[in-house]
Image (tube, rainbow, N blue to C red):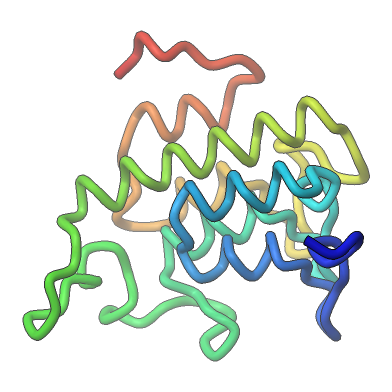
Length: 156
């Protein structure tokens, strides 16, 4: 890969890791981006959101760049399954989201930067706040991972 290719930002201050987190990329993609350069995991965009903020916000609200504040009923976790496509069940989406959260949080703790995993964005929300505010994110292990500095894999 090109040096710096994973740390460049767009006009909203988002790195490729931010964009991948917003789009619900697989944990393998998130892991590859973190391995290429872990620093963006602890950087905020223009709204002060880390990739962790964005990943949890997207899961909770289905929020995207086109729908930045809150997702509609069609974009929230409970409604992401489309009858015309073989979308994974909600349990699988949550399992993948937990893996993504753990990868992002681990990178933030290992390579501290401007933003910690408990920090609030410019709107006063920490990642755990997005999860708690979202109607469909009730997974106790995911919430545990967002609250505690260390996590235990024995919770699953």
